[in-house]
Image (cartoon, rainbow, N blue to C red; front, side, top):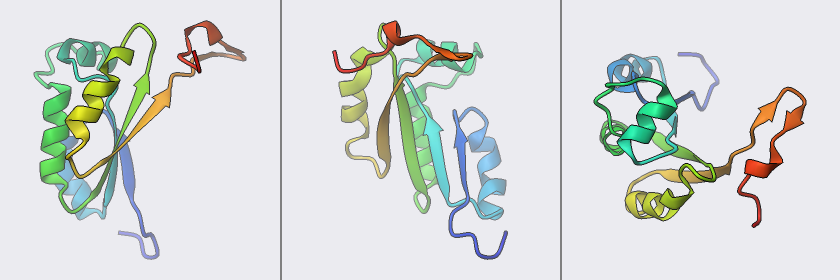
Amino acid sequence: KLEGLKTIAVTTNGINLTRLLPRLKEAGLNAINISLDTLVPAKFEFIVRRKGTNLSSKATVLILVGMLCLLYLQVNCVVMRGFNEDEVLDFVDFTKDLPLDVRFIEYMPFDGKYCCFEILPGQK
């Protein structure tokens, strides 16, 4: 633990968090930002690039909420046209009664110095 720090946070997709959380909490972790872009298990595996995780994204959030009842938890969801934009209302419904904050973030793909504007959800 470092003196003077008010917040020690980590950003994660949650795959190894349940195993590492006790040590992280012991080291002073008091906030977690979880990247969760889908509530569909097959899409979750695609995003984290690991097959057979036996981990559904909903289960991840529920496990974390249960384990982190004393910690600040935030979920970031990057909304991507053609991939998960149809899940926004499902996210709201799933998380509305959980003790966490959800942020919906616009997908902003950058390829070097060029941006792919044609796939951004934007203000359409």
